[in-house]
Image 1 (cartoon, rainbow, N blue to C red):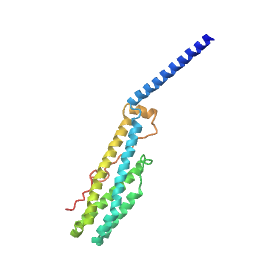
Image 2 (tube, rainbow, N blue to C red):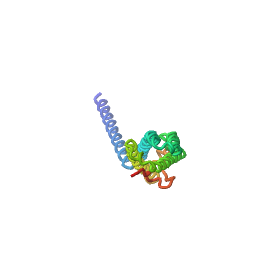
Image 3 (cartoon, one colour):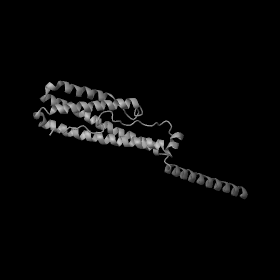
Image 4 (cartoon, rainbow, N blue to C red):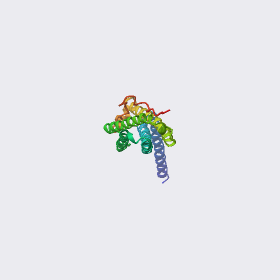
Length: 213
């Protein structure tokens, strides 16, 4: 009887010791794998999505400013209907194309989004040239406030685009280089390389100039 109890106790001790070693091994392997960058790809992917959200937010902020801007200009320069219409139409097209985290891997849709936003930037730039002809408009307080907000938004767009480009480059580089390339092959093969912004218009990497003084 005593021998049986001792045998059971030794068995339980061995099992406990084995479990402890297994747990320690799992913890150690997890630590080693984390140190080898096994989590880098999903982390960088989330950073890309977060950076893209900021790009969308700033473009939406610009789109929200345009109706008031157009109405203000219209009050002083109704004869510039063609230019105003071009801005309104460009805004409608830009806001109709949405690229969210679920469609960020669609190169064609991303390119369409870029082109639409670039067209809106061009239409706004032409509108600002027209404004030079109307000194009364340039001194209007509502217009000056909108001008300041638009300048700030264009700067934020440039920063958000820069951050997104950097995030995509970091993500793509991780997939293409060691050891990220190994982890991508073994565990994240469903996560493709991402498209990045490209300068599709002249000086597209620069914020439009909206100074009137």
